Length: 77
Image 1 (tube, rainbow, N blue to C red):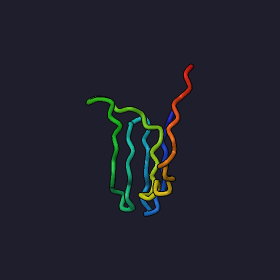
Image 2: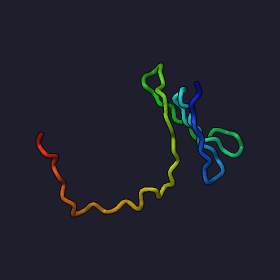
Image 3: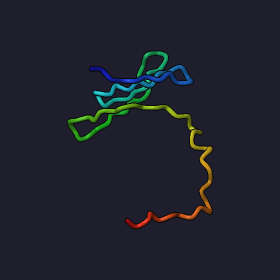
Image 4: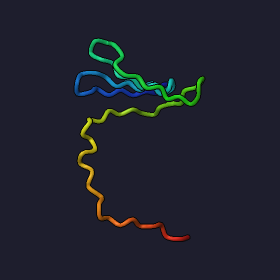
């Protein structure tokens, strides 16, 4: 049973998810690790990572302004 995902990034690098090892990392075009994330549970264990996804820095720039919207409390049971 093997799990993991990969995504080619706009700059030619690759984002790799090694699910069972709790690791996500970016590999540059030169084969060197550019970034690494370890999903620590504690000092000895790593938790599984289902997926890592690269988003551009302006990804959230189109979020609508919520100013003026009233907060609605949930209905009582």
